[in-house]
Image (cartoon, rainbow over all chains, first blue to last red; front, side, top):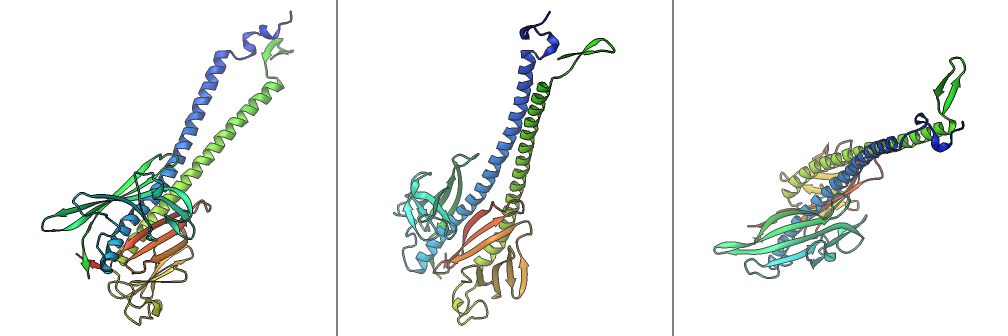
Length: 181
Length: 181
């Protein structure tokens, strides 16, 4: 008797259950390996972006201090460009870059605070290709009786990329009213 | 598929050419995916290691640089023994399209920062010190002092040993103290 295709004996192939189990195991192992690879790729991006963001944070704080210094050296109001009013607790949120460009900036990611990049000018606000990095400074004017006024400055860098969506890094510093040397 | 062993008169199981081709193809695909994934993971590991090397090297180099910049002395007038006469009465002076930095340290020793064969080199009074390791190649460095010489911006591009196409662009600023509290 000739057996048709549908009448094959048990030994002639795999059962549906065997195929399902085998493919599931294969899929699970592949998914696990691919997940590890993806995660590692994400970590690589996070490491790189965090490192660049740290540099930009330090730069922001240093630029604020340099701004105060140049104001003092040039006999200008010491907080010029860093604060807009002098009541205790007044807040000013702004973007600043090394070229001296400033603008008011809102909560990140605000287009006004987006850093641009090119090989000649590196990171700044005016020219170049838009990057994933946004940076702003938030200054809070502080005054106290018998103590020189000061600014509490918080620098924020925001970036969004694979594995680090909406990552914000912050650095705070205090800048005091100073005098010419 | 069943075969008949003529000597033993027993039916034995075997595989058709089609089954073999399908199995080998599947196996090849799985091996290919596994190899690709493994290569990718190795590649990511190397890149992450590169980034860690770059971060470690630059952190050290910046530490050295920051300490020196913050305590820099003014170039005296008519000082052409550290840079050129253009450096007179400034804290920082650059030459060669901002790739070489001259400053005088707190002991008034002439200090030069420059790039040599992909490494950051400091020359202190005629003695050279390399401040980045062989694991990291610095592709470019730029020192941008502000007009008032009250801060200096450092921009550099570096890559590790495993991936020449991937470099990190790092930027930060350092302020020298020129005001008094």
